[in-house]
Length: 114
Length: 111
Image (cartoon, rainbow over all chains, first blue to last red; front, side, top):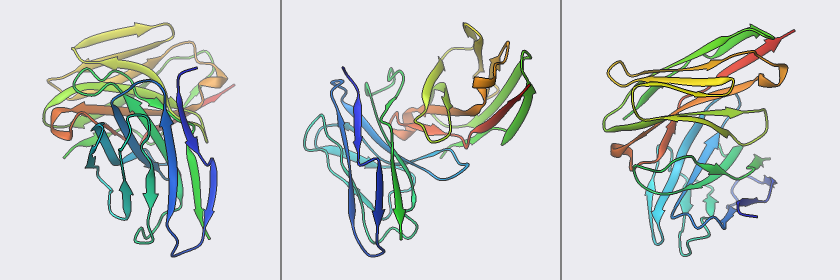
C-alpha cells in the first residue's frame, strides 16, 4: 500500500545529542515536508523540499537539518542546537506547486529530551 | 509572512451544527485547506477551497471568501467522534507552495 512511514514512533534523547528522524514515502511525490507540533498548537513548518537535492527552510528551521538525496526519503536531524526539541514531529508529502492538493501525513514521531 | 487566526476552543452539542471560522492574511494566496486531527494522531484531510463559495462533502462543508480573507468549516449533525482539533491551512506562492497552518480549533462535542 502507498503511504508515508516515519520512524521511530517514540524517541528519547539526552541533552546535547543529535537525533535523526526517518521519513520514507512510496507515493511518488516530489514534495516533502517536516512539521513540528507542540501541545495545543498547530503545525509549524521546519523544512520542505519540492524536488530531489533541493530544500528550503520553513518558519522554525534553526537547530534542524535535512537532506533530500532520494525522492522517497527526507530525514530530519534534530541537532543539539535546538533549544527545546521535545515535540511531535510530522512528515508529509504531496504533489509540488500550486496544484498541490492534500498533504499525506505519516503517523508522527514523538521526541522527548531527558 | 502569513497570519492565520482561528478560535482556540469551541463546544457544541451532539446533533447540532457548528461553524469554525478562519481568517488569514497572506500574499500570493493559492488555496485554503481544512484538516481534522484527533489527539496523538496525524491530521486527516477534510476540504480544499481555491475559489470563492461553498464546497459540500457529506456532513462537512467549507466556505471561502478570497476578498475577505475568510473561510469557515461547517459541521452538521454533530457526532461524539467529531471531537477533535480542526486546522485551517493556507497555501501561497510566496511560501513556496508549502502549507502554513493556523493553531487549530479544539472542538468538544457533548451529549
